[in-house]
Length: 425
Image (spheres, rainbow, N blue to C red):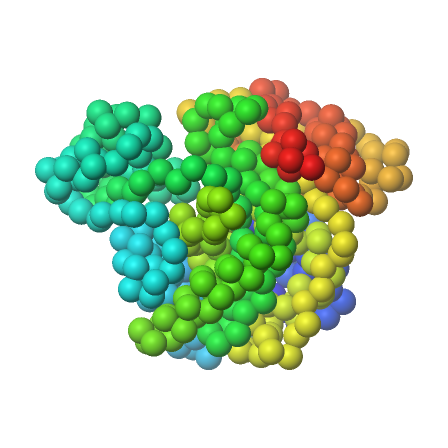
């Protein structure tokens, strides 16, 4: 099987690594990939979706897997399907679940799926009145895609109103912020839960927990994610059952009723409050960095999983995961998330420790291979060091051992990934 992966981050690298272990996958292409993904397959530089579909046709690609949200919202799946090509991901209509927070919140409301109290508006006056009705902190969200950064948790009524003003005026997030969602703040703990869907059926993956803030102890600004671990002991069988009954099944049925069957990854941002799971948001792709931890735990051949989902045959598959834990630590560039950083050569020490070598890997993201053949960190989240183990403690220890083997100027990372699980363990 020949597979094309659309995207070039750590998530796509992790999917490529999982496919590399699948004996049925003979060739992997990345569009565009990154400076290290050429170790797993072949990078191709085609940005236009129509041209990419032509490439897939010409090269007899059996399956295309879309990593990031932007191509999905832009309709890459529709373009490929119109040409008779097999692709894993939702249609542009179904991708509105992530492309518009207003669409998503109204969908949850229409189908009785538990979520926070909210309004959606483009009126500063209406927003201000609703803000006054809530207790601080207050959540303000830009409607459109903002690269995972369009959510403000305002500590006061004044900060919430100012955030709304900046969004509606276009000062924050440009067009993506011209309509907003304002929500009550839910006090609990967050989970990232993923369901692989084929329009009719689904397979639920082990819950993960992400660490959004830049600094230890969940301090500092929000980022795209500074680390994650899976599975989390904070999700028990009761929470999984409630999510399936109250969230996944009504969502798939609702999307089908509304003429946009959902196929692809349904990413549920969940807040658990007093044992009850509520939906904070939906995304329509794997989380990054959660994907980097889930892929090495997948025992079922990755190619088979994605192929069966794309062909509407998930019913035929019994998904299996290794009975282990994975912890991933993001290593970011010097100035992340404030500004770009100068390129810096990445040096990875030879790993002589067999146990570490066999139970860890690096998922590369913000890297470029220069003319000298060396890898350079080129800004943002550079890579993820993932450790595997029989316990969260063991997996975390290996992840941080791997962090110690990686060097580039200005590297930064958190030192407390998985702390919530260990504190509650």
